[in-house]
Length: 224
Image (cartoon, rainbow, N blue to C red; front, top):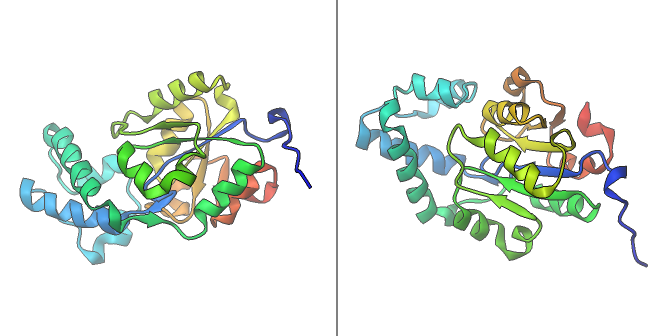
């Protein structure tokens, strides 16, 4: 029996865009490893295990200030971090249940996109051909504070009004970028920042478990 896909107008969102690190994949351990290597190289503060929970409350700007990362050297540090993480991407895997829910959402007729600061090669390899193909647009290598402009451009290319786009992410910067682009923000409860900390940017949708991704096709439970 075939299943008819409902028209986009009957769905809550015409386009759901996802962040990558912490939202679709578990790269936090690799992030800590790379951060501490670069801290030794450039002379800023390490992140010790006992600091992790406290630092997860901070947004990117707050973390940079707390760890005394020199702002003038930040572009070089980010570039080096991406290169190291790309070389070690075999240690990164999808978060349990996330891609299954993304596939279900796609099957319901919702268009999907990816917008991330990680490299295209890393995203494509970690997701694999099957799941990479789910995303009609993939905007990768976005600068640390450049997501808002890229989200706006993504919506224009997709021919979707910003208010019909949901950007799903795990950091305050993701929510701020979504709001700046006129989009709704979906906060996940399993990423780099805890869900309670993401309340500061007023998420429209709260995704407490991966299965909530599939419910974005119409189930109100993920909106509570």
